[in-house]
Image 1 (tube, helix red, strand yellow):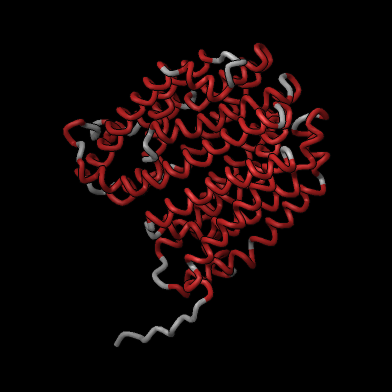
Image 2 (cartoon, helix red, strand yellow; image 1 turned 180 degrees about the vertical axis):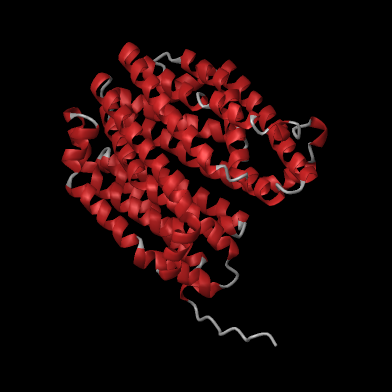
Length: 435
């Protein structure tokens, strides 16, 4: 626990206190207010439709930028003092990523009818929403590119200000559109708000004019692109697989159980997201860099078990409190119409607890670039999520989806423990000091 607290106090505190904590709290408040507006003005069925669109957006956004974000941040941080390499890195990410974005936008726009049928069924016609998303997609991509540059150059205060302003701006527009147009407004807001930060982000980047001059098509380098591929593939597998399987599960609930039940499940997912948001952000800030610098099994084991002993009990207590207050939380965040969602809390929160248990170890896959291990366990996870959910929905109704969430993460955790069994539980020989 000592090293974790020391690292937080010395290396992460400024970022967590000034960027992560404030930004996450603002996101949670904005999310709760948006959920309340959807619950009161649109209702349970609308919550299910918006859930499908949110999952689809998550997958499309990741695909559009080829999962370059974290790789770009890492490589900019490494080469920012070397102008030529920096120019190659930024130029390659920008041009390749933007071509990919335009391609995804083009495909989405001209296949809007098919996408509408997949997300909303033939009973609803929100084709125009998909077309608006396609038009807004390049602006989202450019915004994310600018954010990656700021992140790579450690412009955390600037990112904090833009994030907070963007959250409030997005919240205001979302509430206004929901009030004006109900479900249509909510869907349009969902596809537009991620692109709204571009103007502020672009102004911030323009202040770094020397960076703009580094973006040249002549500096696109295939060698740099190869360096991005492992990070891009891992990011894409994670960002596409889970949202896509969520859409399939939600559509199955709608088909087998009903639209209202799918809305209850979406409400439970939102509560789950709020519970996980802070601890997952903290783990991203600490464990990725920490595991990257660890060179032996002893330190890896020590970090994992320190986390289990020092942080996990607080998280467990928080989840228990959420469970005990579930009726109040549902009424505050949603409305009385969502009361049946309280029956989903136990299995969902148990699954979230096991998820955190497993993810803290699984960060090692990314930190050590264990590419195939990561892909295999992610594919295993989404397959188990779908298969267990479908099987259990047939037996228990919508509750089967949250039981499937728990079972799939227990199986995932078991596989992760198996892969790292020697590091976590095996005998570690004493290292012989070098003479």
